[in-house]
Image (cartoon, rainbow, N blue to C red; front, side, top):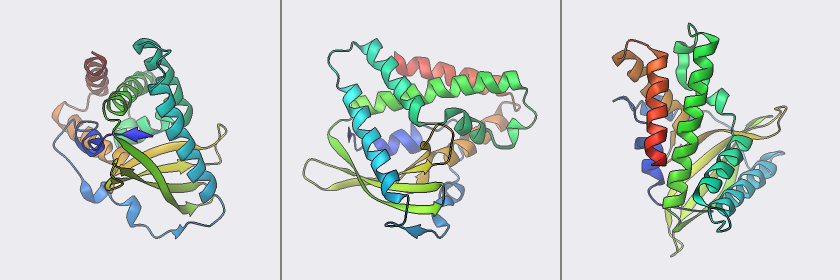
Amino acid sequence: MRIGAHLAGFGVAALLTLGAATADGAARSVSAVPAVTSEMPGTQEAEGFVQSKIDKGYTILNDQSLNADERRIEFRVFLLSIMDTRRIAVFTLGTNARDASDDDIDVFVEAYTNFVTALYQDHFEKYKDEIVRVTGATRRSDNDVIVHADVVGRDGGRKLTIAFRVRGGEARGEIITDLQVEGVWLGLNQRANFASYFQRHGGLLASLSSELESRAQRIKQ
């Protein structure tokens, strides 16, 4: 799938930043845990899963038979079919999810989903001069594999490295639970930035939900 060299900004800055915290130590902590590497059972399946989804996403975004609204709807449905956005959204709240009501959590999950799907589509559509190529995988457990990929330019040179965390054993099959850009896990980075946002806004989940909805709308416009 083609995507732009500005994917780094899409992940670490534009995609996630709501506060001043970057929390590199936390964001990089997953990759610091020892794990066995490729050629073990399950890694090739995860690699194939990620590459096929990359290709499918590219096909949707370049389908000229769809208008902009139809493409947006289809890409959103596609993302939701391969990502457990509720699980990711609740994770990003950290301890702030403990005292939140079910209704507030539901509103946040919807806002988070709208924000992430709009942002992913915006950046995948804007930058199509490079190719995302799966290069291998790291098996962390029976149902947890990190699939590595390079963003490669037309000259064949590597622009940056990314990775997808794939979890298996779910009722819905394999799902992507996080994305890493140049060593930084986006879900962990979001969690740190949301914590900073809560500190500056009195811990109001409704305020964060409203902020994410506003950002989603601005992206679409």
